[in-house]
Length: 258
Ligand code: 13P
Image (cartoon, rainbow, N blue to C red; front, side, top):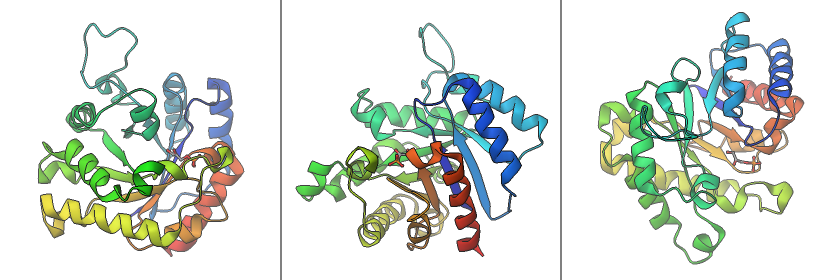
């Protein structure tokens, strides 16, 4: 399986800044068949970056940070995944910031996962427990609800088009005081995610679903996170905004994959 290195820029960088960043990335990285690199800029930068990637014949991919589950209609201010088709290969679904700041529920996410698959875009489904849920020993139940909630109507054929990102909410944005997740704890939760997938789809199919880790990943810990059994890549926030750091992490991923 490939290693996925995905940068989630969240609500940062203007269109101009995004384009300059991408140019630097394209100049500096040598793509490898083992590594899939994607960035998720702001929605308004997708068109510009998509043209830029095409012009450079680059294999770097784009991801959307969010979309609405309906394909078209009277939904002022929303962008559909159908409109994103042709611009992005991936779309992040159910990031904890969408769950907790914008109130997205597992029911919304089920519709989003289905919409992405219907439009040939790979959903990167984020799951993860909050600090409180972790303290009260509810991690298992939360992960189970999030996996079953979002995937209950996705069949075995389609789940092969899904990527899961485990992002413990308490480990996101260490620059803002979050904690750093220990490899052992991540390994345990990833085992849990795999066993939920096995329960629904069986072992063979469950093994085909890539699982990424996200939460305060930086060039100093990326290598350790990538060697955790079951981790197939990284979803990076803060560190992906610094192009030198993101490039370093891609190089580390290449070394680990070798
Ligand atoms: P940080 O890498 O800034 O902790 O963010 C992780 C994240 O939320 C990626 O989606």
